[in-house]
Each structure stands twice: as C-alpha cells, then as structure tokens.
Length: 420
Image 1 (cartoon, rainbow, N blue to C red):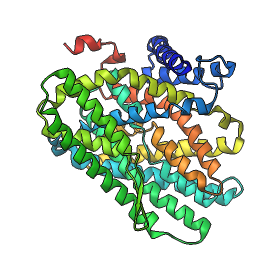
Image 2 (cartoon, rainbow, N blue to C red):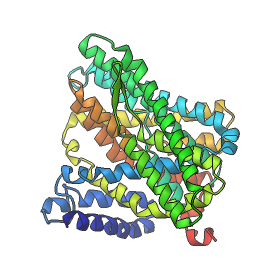
Image 3 (cartoon, one colour):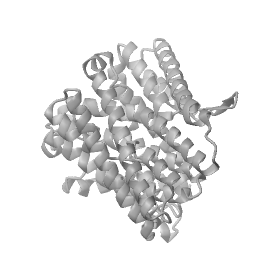
C-alpha cells in the first residue's frame, strides 16, 4: 500500500511542480528532480508519514528497479539515432568527439586532483584522484534525452549530441575500468592486467553482442504480429528482457564477465531500427508509453540525492574543483574535436555545454570505487557533483540548444500542434 501511494505521490507531485517550472522557463526534468528532493528523507520524507515521500535513502533505493528499467528504455530510444543514414552523415564526427571530450575531461580532472594531493595529501589520495578523473568522463543520457523530447529539439547539434552521449558510455566504461584497476594496484602494489585491460573490452563486446541478438530477435518476433498494441507490447517486453539479462554476471577463466545496461539496450534499439521498416512508428508509441516511467525515474533520482555531503568542507572543496575542471574538460574537448572534424560553428560552440549532466552511470562507478581505502570520499564527491549537475545541467542543455536554433524560442510551441 505504502509503495503504491508513494509512487502516485511522486508521479503527481513531479508533474504538478513542472507547471511553475514552465513559468520560470526551466526544463521539466529539473522540476522532477526538485520534487524528488522535496519528497526525500531531508524534507517531507523526514516527517515519517507512511506513503508521503521517502523516509530514508534505503526507501528510495528500494525502488531502484524502476530506474534500471527507465535507463533501459532511454538507451533503447537513443539507439534509434544510430540509423545508417545518420552514421554516414556524422558517424566519424560522433566517434572522434565522443572519445576526445571524455579523455579530455578525465585528463584535466586527473591533473587537477593529483596537484591537490601534492598540496594537501590528507584530503585525497592519488588512487581516489585518478578514479574521480575517470568518472568525470561519464555523461548522463537521461537528462539530455528528456530536454530534447520536451522541447522537440531537432537539428545537427541535437543528432550529434545523442550519438556522442551514447558513445560516451563505452568510452567512460573503458576509462573507469583502466583507472580503477591502476588505483587498486597503487594500493595493493600489484597491477592486474586482466582487470585493467581485458575486462572492460570483454564487457563492451558482450554487451554489443547481446544487444545485437536481442535486436534481431525482436524484429523476427514482431513480424508475427500486425496489431499496433501487440507490437508495442512485444517491444516493451524485449526492453525489459534485455535490461534483466544485462544484470547477469559470470566468470570465465578468471575473467569477470558482465554487461552494460545502456550499451545492451542501445544496441538493441540500433539494430532493430535499421532493419525494421515500421520502427519509427513503433518508437513513437514506445515514447508515449514511457513518459510516466521517466517522470518517476527523475523523481526517484532526486530523492536519492544525499544532502548530507554538504556538511563536509573537504568534500565541498574537492567537489568544486571536480565540477569546474570536468566542465572545462568537456567543453574544451568537444570544442577542439568539433573544430578538428569540421563541425559547424554552432555545434562547435554549443556541444560542450550539453555534455555536462551526470547521474546514474557516475553513481554506479562511485559505488564500485568505495572499495578503495578512501572510497567514501569518491562517492561523496560524485554525489555532490550529481546534485549540482542534475539541477543545473538540463537548463544549460536547453539554453545551448535554444542558442543553436534547434528548439523553438522558450519551447512555447505546443507539442500537440507540432505533431500534427
């Protein structure tokens, strides 16, 4: 009973708060995150009224399965952007920009935090510094996709952005696995080549293979049905299936094998959309079905933002440096790589701003990093940065797309009219 009431309050509360957010010209996703903060354990949830908010972090994390499902659908939708026609047009640019901006952010954060270690070694260790640097590469696809959807953004910048965000997940995975392996080696005194080099590559290859099989199978099954509602149900079922299978982990010959939820579902969407002639209509229906799920995803994300990290001066210091340097790395990396690949002036100038949001993937990496000697520092800094980026990032993304001329002024055009 409490779970159902809590979910209904989260959904309705998030939607109601989006009304004043619209008047303030803020993206709806920001309103959903603020609604989550208000319903979380530091505000309404602290009252302890059953069903009204989340009384503890554990209560919000208890519904984490909804977040995993939402991320699966987000990745499946982004996979739709990797159509052969678009890959021919800007695939080379997306790959170069996706790699360069991630590596730039990691390199600059590594440099800044290692310098901080040399100046104040008691605040942060070298292992935590390089781990945070690798986490800096991750960009959250969810907030970006929601802003694009809300304002019906479309154009070269939007298309390149969605492709770069998808590629960013694979690059971030490799950077984190390698950096975390080196960090563990620094603390133990022995480098494990399997952890640093083999496991991240195996995870990417397995994820792409599973996604490809799922995409082919989805297309094969869809051909047996002609009803729109049944095809929609099959698509939803397959996304749930791939999201579930991506959580499987096993070991072969001492190599830990696992899957990336985002990569698996993204590959499923990519292959399906490239071989299915009715995929565009079906994707539009899937988007409509997932709307309330995405609202819940962001409200739950807001409820999981831990405000207790604001009490630590050292975490705030590291967090401010991390946020500033990561933002600089993302902007300079995308600016330089866009200029190198011949992107237009609008894309070169504005793409970096749209790559700032950070959330679920970074938090997952931070949880893994807790096994370091001062892993709690890494987790606290990432929590602080997510708090800032998730509240500010969507607005910056909206303004960048608006400045590039890829959304209507202030998003005032009715989506209903635009879809006619």
